[in-house]
Image 1 (cartoon, rainbow, N blue to C red):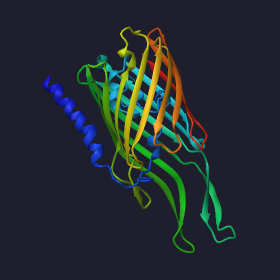
Image 2 (image 1 turned 90 degrees about the horizontal axis):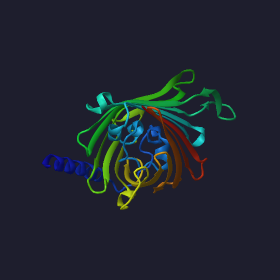
Image 3 (image 1 turned 180 degrees about the vertical axis):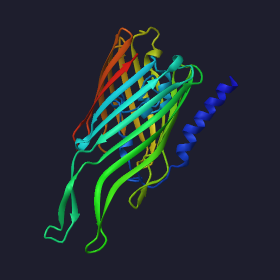
Length: 336
């Protein structure tokens, strides 16, 4: 009991004190690069406004809180996601989790995220009437690849972490050094980043709380400009509201989830998500993002089916995005 109480105290101290210690009064805008690391990588999460810090049992938890990977139900859990982002940008991601020996010694995970920015026309300053000339078609891209580990330390407490390599290529640029000499720069940057998280399930109505720290890294540079990755501190809680009903169906759930977010580049935000699951097969989702410029309500649904020893899930999410084209995500999940 004393050990469990110590774990709870440490978790609370981590989730509360760390974010407040770095909170500043100044407005925070455009202070980080590699923003693709902040884009959602799971349709279920997107439908719930990404209030996912305390939800467990799936490999794509690597993108939100690695501790949630510790309680996958099968030996292998695979997730594939396509995110049709704004400005015709495509985000694709893959997650995989393996639980050897029933997860007795933890769960090992792998994540891969790629970004296709499309084609961009390159230009260069020139002494003609237009002031520039076309150079070549650029194909900027980005990706990250990570390896994670999570473990249930008790029936209530799980921890997890991930180390990942992030890379971004923004095409070539030509810098004149004299009237006849020019330097061609390949705008490439990469960095190692770390994610860490914890989840604790209480004995009161299985109320759950947790925290995550994502994209912790050193400063990196594009050419001569230094910047940091989108460091994010997230505190969350969730509960199945049907636990408050005297008589409830074991095959249905109504999960309410709330996350408080502290980011390096933005002021504090709140994500609120709801998921209603009927007969362990059909899921209806909704959410709301508070203090975002263009995003607000989110919507989604999913269909999950057990086929022999395999569980297959298909999820969809729709996010209105203000002045931009609305965002749609599709995910496929396999567990066996």
